[in-house]
Length: 144
Image 1: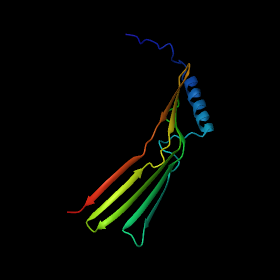
Image 2: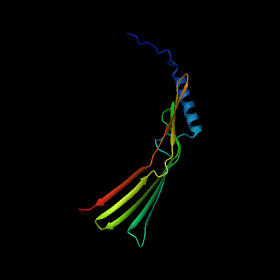
Image 3: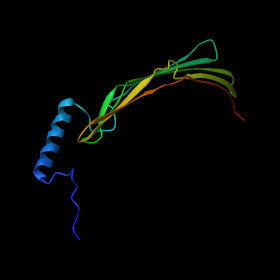
Image 4: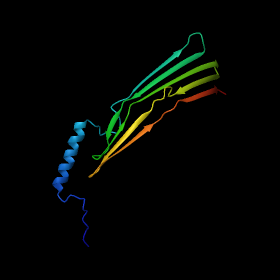
């Protein structure tokens, strides 16, 4: 039984190889990364214990730069930068009882993602906006 030919398939293997090589050069020229991670991230944390009060203050700042990831020859994804700031305060009533107040993602910023898929006949672009919110917590910690 014979195989049906795919009308969209290129019968010349050399032409397919040239297309892949050209796509690789374009990807390299655009500086897109083939990895699933940004080039790096930054994190800075500070803790301050007040000398005459049973209070400890904490702050943390995390930064992830914008990056484009080349997932396949035909598909790339972009994620905008993300900045997250966390704040907390810990009041120690006695060695067994503490009250912790915290705000995670204290200054919420929106971020966006963009995915591009290149087919033989078109470029499909999908854009999403992600909202973030502050998470407030109050916890009473008691050691038994």
